[in-house]
Length: 271
Image (cartoon, rainbow, N blue to C red):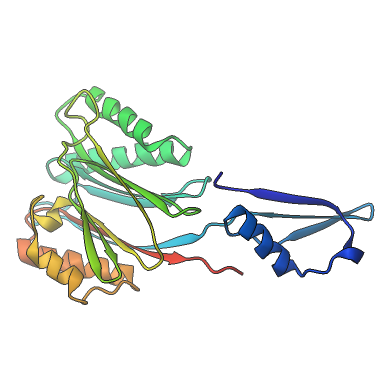
């Protein structure tokens, strides 16, 4: 239902009156999705054509990460990637504690999830396996997980949070806060996670961060003022991520690792 493929066999070109763009737009209207340009082939004098669904949305990312003042190594991990089924993921993982040990658990968790999600594993199942993996690894190492999945074909997005800091969506000048009251991965036998779903729109800016930015899970007035005050540039995710991260470091004195990921959602061109 997400990715469609259309094949037209034995086309009699002498009877075709519509142009290639007209045919493609007609297919798109019927199927309710955006289609690729037609690809033509000739076999023994018979003409065939085909086209397929293309993503409606694209996401541009910018990141900022800095270790806390007491350590040279950040215990946060952040990554963004796409799988072969048209899903885009961003993951922020904050290892409990600081320094090398925290960096190891967050880094391993990020790689674990990236491998599973890239192979097409559902988000919930991947997180449940990660929870078992972390609990079975021994020691007292835990990690938060803040995971966003965006369907580039439909625009449907989902957040799953386990002990993670709030995330934010800026849409048409309005600020929306996404948060949960859960514990990090590996602490409880059963996965403790909350999911939030919403529909992406072109022009949205999504901000994900570690708790080194907010300082707590409660209100963070300076961050709200920054996001709503026009200082952040939604057209430059990297610059916005750096501005948030450097301001957080100034406010907190780098008391904790700081990670920010900013994503700008755009609608792909229909070429």
